[in-house]
Length: 156
Ligand SMILES: CC(C)(COP(=O)(O)OP(=O)(O)OC[C@H]1O[C@@H](n2cnc3c(N)ncnc32)[C@H](O)[C@@H]1OP(=O)(O)O)[C@@H](O)C(=O)NCCC(=O)NCCS
Image 1 (cartoon, helix red, strand yellow):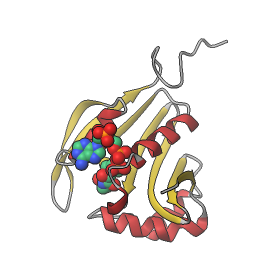
Image 2 (tube, rainbow, N blue to C red; image 1 turned 135 degrees about the horizontal axis):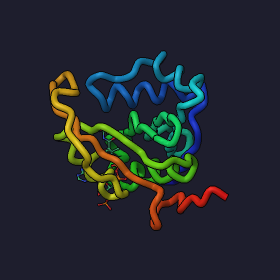
Image 3 (cartoon, rainbow, N blue to C red; image 1 turned 60 degrees about the horizontal axis):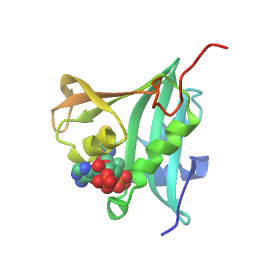
Image 4 (spheres, rainbow, N blue to C red; image 1 turned 120 degrees about the vertical axis):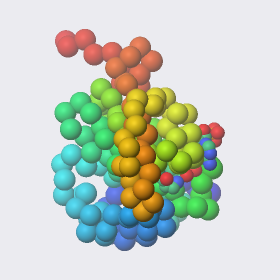
């Protein structure tokens, strides 16, 4: 296995759409994914094994805040550190004060991943998800701390 991570290109959108359909009950459409390439606030990064796309992360950045919309790794590649590598790759490339996300309260793998890289639980959104209806756990990671990956800002 030789995993590389790089930004999504137009020719990758179909592969990302297939991972969306494999992983989510309400997947983004191919159009939604293609649209990400046209939005200045959006960044989508892919993990590949050779030429095969095996995972992706999509975030939107508004002002100093990253919103993590989606992260997924194909079933056979899970549990090998690819999810964490995608998150860390994104964090190295986008400077922000914090990153926010919602996750299904039953999604132990994702919650475990987010906790493992420093996200904290900050709230609950009742009935946020459909198919099936479920609460969302809100999680946040702050970067502007002594240990934050972006370091302290001094305004000079
Ligand atoms: C969530 C997801 C992206 C994790 O990807 P992954 O590549 O398997 O995760 P990693 O191998 O990088 O795991 C990193 C850490 O996450 C946690 N983790 C991963 N899988 C876990 C599981 N099944 N249960 C509990 N914790 C888990 C662990 O802390 C792990 O660290 P460790 O291996 O050192 O113990 C993957 O399970 C997935 O694609 N799920 C379906 C899509 C999804 O639910 N996305 C989240 C939407 S909010």
